[in-house]
Image (tube, rainbow, N blue to C red; front, side, top):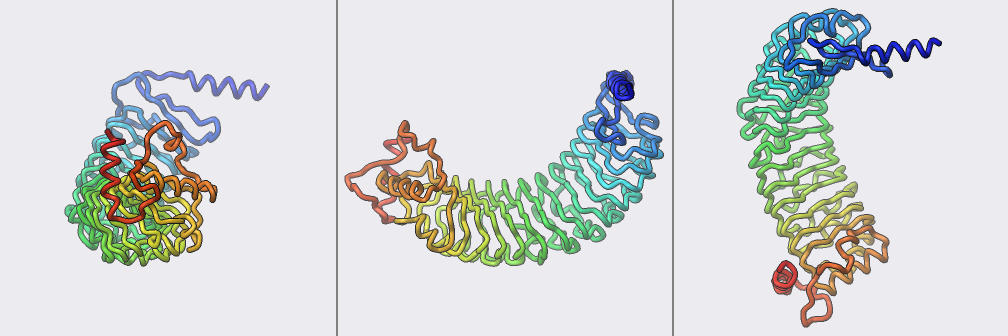
Length: 420
C-alpha cells in the first residue's frame, strides 16, 4: 500500500500545472534534485518561491525554461545547492548579488544565454565552484578579477562567445591556478598576450578550435606546460607547423590540427612529444611528409592525414611508433613502398586499421597493398573496393611503378578516366 501511495504522489506532481511558473518536480531517482520544464508563458523572471527556500535541494535544472531575468532572492536559502543549470534561456545579464548565499555550489551552467559580461564580484561567494560553463553566449568582456574568487575552478568553458584575443587580460586567471580544462573555441584569439596562461599550472586540456588563428599563439609556445594532455587547434587558418611550436609540451597525448591550411610541417615539429598517442592532420594542404616526421614517438598509435594533397608517403616517417590506426585516404599518391605494412611491423608498429581509399592508385600498386592488408588481417575500407566502382588506373606498364616521376602520369590518367 505504501508503494501505491508513493506512486500516486509522484504522478500527482508530474501532472501538477502552474500557468505562470515552470513546472518543477523532484527527480524520482534523486529526491533532492529539482528538474523544471517551462509552463505556459513566453518569458519568465525567476523570482523567490519558484525554486528557493529548501534546505535539502542539491541540484536545480532550469534549462530551456524561457527565463529572461533572475531576481535577487531567486536562490534564497539553498545551503545544500551544488549543481545549478540555467542553460538555454534568454538571460542577458546577471545582477551583482544574484548568486550570493549558496556557497556550496560546485557546478554552474550558464551556456546558451545572451550574457555579454559579468559584474565584478558576481562569483565572490562561490569559493567551491569547480565547473563553470558560459559557452554560447555573447561575452565580449571579462573584467580583471572576476574569476579571482574561484580558487578551486577546474573546468572553464568560454567557447562560442565574442571574445577578442588582444582584449583578454593576461592576468585573468592569476588566482584560478587549478584550471584543468579551458576552452576558448569559436572566439577570435588572434594577438592574445603571450602571458595569458602564465599562472595556470595544472592545465590538461586546452581547446582553441575555430579561433581564426593564423599562427600558433605565443601564449602556448612560450609557456612550459607540465601536465597538458590534449591540445585542440582544429578549424583555424594555420599554414605551417614549426619545430619550436610544441617543444614545451612533452606530456601531450592528443594533438588536433585538422581543418587548417597547413602546407608545411617541419621535420622535427613533433620530436619532443614523447607521450603523444594521437595526431590529427586531416583536411589540410599537405603535399610532402618529411622522412622523419613521426619517427621514434613510441606511444603514437593513431595518425590521421586524410584529405590532404600528399603525393608520396615515406614508410620511414612512421618507424619507431606503435601506429595501429593510420588514415591516408583522399590524397594524391599513386603507390606505396613495397611491403609497406611489413616494413612497419618490422619497426615495431602493428597496423589494425589502415584506410588508403580515394587516391589516384595504379591498379597494380593497389592490388599489392590490398593483398598485404588481407595477409595481415588489417581492417580497411572494403566498401570502397567492392568491384562496382572504378578505383584505379592501368597503363601500358603492368607492374607497380614505384617512382615519383611516374606519379604525375598516373594522376592525370586518374583525373581523365575516373573523375570524368
